[in-house]
Image (cartoon, rainbow, N blue to C red):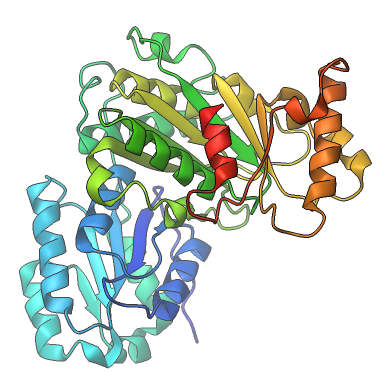
Length: 402
């Protein structure tokens, strides 16, 4: 009989991944789903992830724990290197958990525990504790608050650790004020006690699965390649599960451009909405202010998947982009989509699918009617067909250059 899920006292965040040169992600997918079902917010990176990628993510996301599955044979070096990088970054509080079935033998488990790894689970642990029991242990050990100082004293620095803690403090204050005036409804610079310089902010929104993260990645990649000195902050939002309070923060899986040679020029933070029926978080306005105060040249906000009436992203950004596909139903459904009235640009993604050409025609005509631009050619409306999954897609390039 499985034990009941542990009930966290504080918001708990985990980074999960399969290790480098390891394509076996079935185990880590099971564990991260149980973490989510137990109330944790999980930043999932998928498989074949290097130590540097995992550590950079953990620091930027200000997590309490890292969970790694490793079946590739290099687990001792992998976990020790991860521990060393966290200590060097001043983030030794982040606890490391792992497993690899019978690949990690008992002597190696003891060696890793002695080195400072929080727990390496063995097959015997799985038999005696069960999956939920292992997750409960991880959650209980990581159920501690991440406190930060929400003022201007440390703003303006580009330290990922300092920024992460500032954003955590902003998010915590928004939670505390739930039901009252939400934190961040006023001007972000005023509430933080600082004066902000103008920084362009792009908002990318759309329905779930439309391709927002892939588009974000392609836009970021083009900016990084074209401007060697530009520094970008990306704020990404995913929905909180209403029943459990957990969340899958999975947008980083699509963000290939933020790692590798450009990693030091991009900061990314994932937020859960921490409330139902919302595509944004109450902490977003002040979170954007923190990014601007840190001196980034561009801030990109990606919302959770939205419904027909959601347009709140337009109140937070300078330029809004609505991402959709051809699968919206009859053309009359376009008249119900609020973002087609509010967005500065519309992206018709997955243009290779059947019916996309007809959808492009209808969307352009709808935008023309919305703007009362009957004297203009519908083809000139800011609607961009694209295939974001295609590397260096010309449609994305036209949007970028526009």
